[in-house]
Image (cartoon, rainbow, N blue to C red):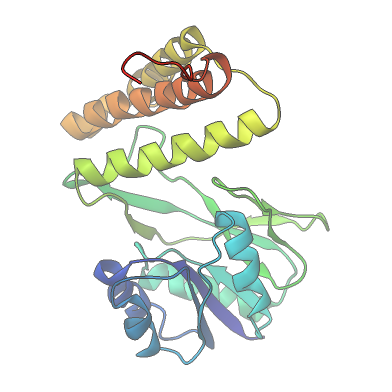
Length: 259
């Protein structure tokens, strides 16, 4: 059984080399670049000759599907450039592939954010389904928050060893990613005929804060936990506000003052 480490990337020069260094043991490394303007593709070619550029962005799900189609190995390990495979996780992955059972495996992800690893707040172990046999499972076509589909009803197993996730460089990076996800979420909902309201945004935002900070013990993550709960509440509100603006507010009049 062979394993391919698969990455979809764009402008990830700051992260990519450190990520790929933890994947040298894979039988195959596949990198699909969405049209980087930095040295991402050059770095990728230091580790593999299977580097493809496709700048026709149709969303995260479609891009992962395209990357899956480039794989020749029996198994796929889907990884993001800001993640690192620890030694313990590497051995767990190798053992699972060697076993050869058709199953989907989840990896425990430990995120570094604003100066520390976050072990509460609902962020850990944050198991993500990333290891699966090619052709027996695959990603959906969602614009954002894409999911691994299991059409064959494969059993789901849990691996040991952390997948380290260096999620945000700074506050600006967080806010930019949050705005991008809010826009994609609102676009998807609006396309399905859904409507938003500011009151729904307030309720969901408050619920997000209480869930992260109190129910999921975010207070044990110290100041980082408080900051994350507040930012997550803001991000949740922003999604509903974006949807409200798209579906409930009128366009500007053609005879606006000053024209």
